[in-house]
Image 1 (spheres, rainbow, N blue to C red):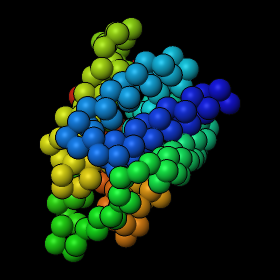
Image 2: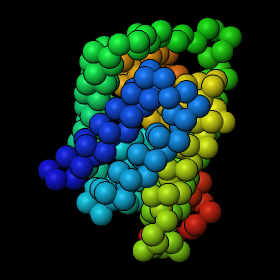
Image 3: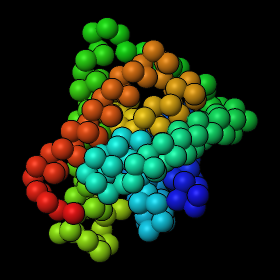
Length: 214
């Protein structure tokens, strides 16, 4: 139960930061805050739950062989609940602040869904690839840089790809931004398909590259 609570808390603060910075007007500094909060939450909870904070990462770690099957559903439920609650809390706080405009839900047109899907796949793949190599591989066991590496992956991909897809790279984030009204519900399939496919692809390629790294 403790590790599910850690997953809930870490995902909550990740998505609260997204809502507060993006809607609150942090502008180009938002990815820096988002990558930073992910980094510190990973350092805070990594020794308890593995600090996935992302259903696609949980899938990748499971397929890689470092997450029990019994933990998959509880991890994902905790992450999604954390994301949804963070969106509710964030939008409530912002609604009480003067000068903060309500978010306008972005919608992928039929012509932009494919680039957005590709960006979500690439960003999530990069994230899961870094997680697997820095937090689960024998060659990097016991390192002190895994949180920084993972946080900076999200930061870099948010700057590089976020302008096209919104830069979720995480189904819990996709749910959160939908609840918060930052992204239209019609977009969510793009995030879910791209994110979960990328998690699976990263796990299979990790196993291909690293062989019997158990």
